[in-house]
Every structure is written in structure tokens, then in C-alpha cells.
Image 1 (tube, rainbow, N blue to C red):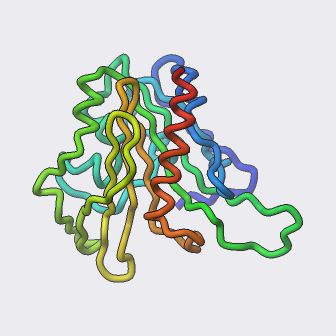
Image 2: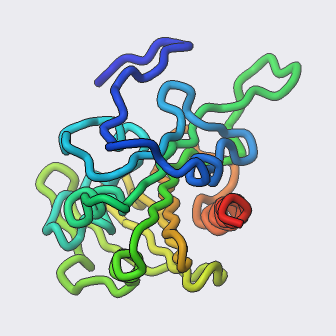
Length: 231
């Protein structure tokens, strides 16, 4: 594991080809309640195609579950970013990626406290309508419903009810066995211009609010900011 020193910034080069759409950078959240953009690897826009598929630039800014399974399950277990790189790594596709995780200390606070907000990652993807429709399809393949990994244990992908946003929005959680009962809470919002994904992982110390309740609040704020950027 890479040790990050205070004030250090990621020096991994952006693997994208050409400049990204500035609206995508503006669309990303930089904070939610008392957590903010990770200072080590701040949000960035990656214009595809990416030549170096082994680059850690995007994974450093996204949160993936530990489950490894069939490729058709990638967008559910790892996230939309991996599905995009594997299936849609072509000109005209762009991704804005960020991780929200640094705590913002309260003014005058002398002791650390549990954050109100949860650490999470956000991805905003643009491209053709056909690609967005395929990526945004909420129908879970049968073989992805139950997960199993020798190093992680077993788990399930279970749907969650969330308020309607964009043209469609849907959510799910990834359960686990043993010490981690829930690995992730995920919400996807699709519009005609972009696809937005929020992923909250299991974390310590726990936020003061339930991640299942925080998820739609984060998604609503992310959607509001994205809509403003794409006006």
C-alpha cells in the first residue's frame, strides 16, 4: 500500500488523450457535509481512448468492491469506470472521477470526531446515447446476483429504493459475509447527456448517518451540481 504524506499529491500522469470537457470538471462534487475531495488525488477528467489500461490514475479516484467475478458483473462490483475502459475505450467518451474522503475539521475543534458525511467516489461519464443506455441498464444479470470470492467470502447484490432523478435512477447494495455485512451502497443516475454514479464503501470510523440514508442525499447534491454544469 502506498503511504501518503500530508500535503502530498499524486504524480501519476493522466492517461487520457487530449483535453477533457471543462464542464465535467465543474460537475464533480468537491465536498459533502464535512468530507471533501481527497487532496492527494483531486478530481480529474479523462478523455478516452486511454493507451495505458494499467494506469492507476482512474482507480485511485474510484472505489471498487473486493469481489472479482465475470466481466459482465464489472459495472456492479468494480464500478462504471472499469466497464467503460473495457468496452468503450474510444474517442468521444469521457470520464470525470473523484473521491470524497478528507475530513474538514470544525472551527475550534480540539478533538477529532466522526464525520457526518461518508467517504465516497463519484464518476460522471459522457458519450453516445447508445453507450449511456447500455451502461445505465439497471437489469442485473442472473449470474451477478450472488457473489463469491475465495479471499472475500460471499455476498449478494440487492436493489435499493431511491427517489427518482434524471431520466432514471436506481441503486443497490453489495452485501458481504463475516465481519463486513455490507461492502457498498451504490446509486446510478442517467440523463440524455451523462451517467452519474455514487459509490459509498463500508468504512471506519462509521459516519454518524446511515450510508443507506446518505446515498440519496449525496446523489441529489451530485445531480444538482452536474445539471448546473451542463446548462
